Amino acid sequence: MTACAVMASAGCGAASALPLPPKAIALNTAGALAIEQGDLATAEASLSVALEYTPRFVEAWVNLGYVELARGNFEQARRDFVRARALNGQIPAPDHALGVLADRQGQGARAEAHYRAALQIDPGFAPARANLARRLFARGQYENAREQFERLALVAPDALEAWTGQVEALEQLGRATQAEQVASRARERFGDAPALMLLVARQLLERGEWTEAEAALAPVVGGGDRPRAGAAWAWIAVARVGLGDVAGALRAAREAQAVDRDDPVAAYVLAHQRVP
Image 1 (cartoon, helix red, strand yellow):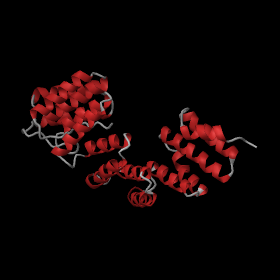
Image 2 (cartoon, one colour):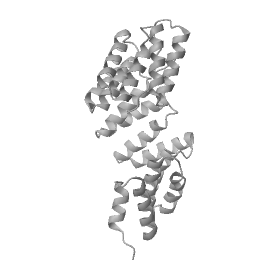
Image 3 (spheres, one colour):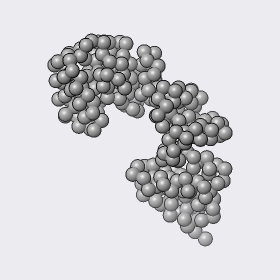
Image 4 (cartoon, helix red, strand yellow):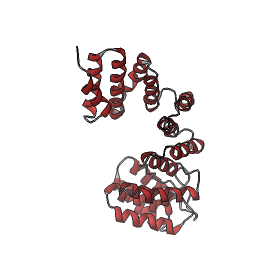
């Protein structure tokens, strides 16, 4: 689930209610950036000094909790998040952070409750909206997930996941025409983004448009995202089966398994196709 290192001014959450020293803000920003880069030691040092300037700095406490979460120190992360919420219960970031922690610990119901609490404070808080939508999708609540992804698109229209999430939920609901319409609107905004093209290719496969599907997937296999490239190879294997190119399908399926040996689509192709 998505964490969200918090800046003091905007973005992931509302700013602290108290006036903040510029140096503390700068240190919190540096700490948030260090978290995103995986430099936890630098993040901890920056955030600790920010809190020396302003011990009631809510965002710095949230970010310090994310440092502990990244280290696997769940109880310390919880203490930091709870402290942040106690300092100011009108900022969504602490409840969202508690949801991320609950998700990490496999406590799905508790995670959902925290994401909803964050959204009660700020319905436009995109990270909580995205994580709630993912949780609903994961437990098969596809209509509710679709609704949350749709709302995410309203508050964060440049978030690609808001659109791909709608497409996947609609596909699960058997509403293929609507899924294609959402995918079309998404392509107008994002072009041929790889995550989107995977979904477009699957739609083409469902219509038996094998050549078009492989053409849509070809750029994805050459991208830098190896898991996505592996998934693209698996669907190319399906397209080649449809074209009657069994040898080509087996080659594509093996390419997929070179990335993910457990890819179910590749495994199915390899189990059911034989070179004549």
